[in-house]
Length: 320
Image (cartoon, rainbow, N blue to C red; front, top):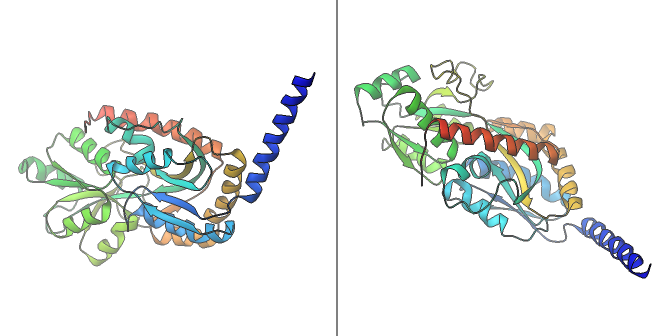
């Protein structure tokens, strides 16, 4: 009886301690880690959310960029942090869907090593090319590549670009040289400078260059046309049948983060992400923002992990 009483008292104390921790959370600044560098879509979305999350939590929210290995370095860093809610990862399809299949030395599990907080939304990507090239469509791109073997190159700043361009190469039977970058902005600069031919870029970083005429858009990656560029065809319409690449963002924390903290973060973040003010800021940078429950994000991550694994296998993509 005494032993049972001790167990009950211990369990009650643990629950009280967890509830007290959640009530006091956060008592110091929170860090939100972006998986790509300054000026990237990941960094931009982090800063939009952090500006509102800080006042909501009553503590500063610091954005920290940790680019490298297509987002895997940032994910590994957050995985090794204390599970206390003070270090969050703005996870994307790169570290949480594609990296485990593209890189042999990924030392984390996207499902087991993180606890989901909320979805943040989806990026829409477009295939952009150096406007000095005589290419105005995906069909012309394929024809040009076949007529000029080895002449075209493609840059990548994330796994979406790798999977998309390798898939186009595989489906169209063409040859192009892959030039990897740690992030999208420097890759775009090299396309504008004529050092690389093309890349799959997010609206967030590509739109200013398209508006300036220094990049030419050819197609969008998702199966439906974008409301921001309604005249731009989808890759499916342009001839790569069935092509549908959805790139996404979601906030996660190290596995073991207390449920009370996760729920507190989820409640604050959902109000921010779904607010008219945040929606307007997202739209301005070509991002479709929407939130979810932790459970919905968890199920989504599992499904995306399987989907990206199949795309990478079907295109026979081998990195390292």
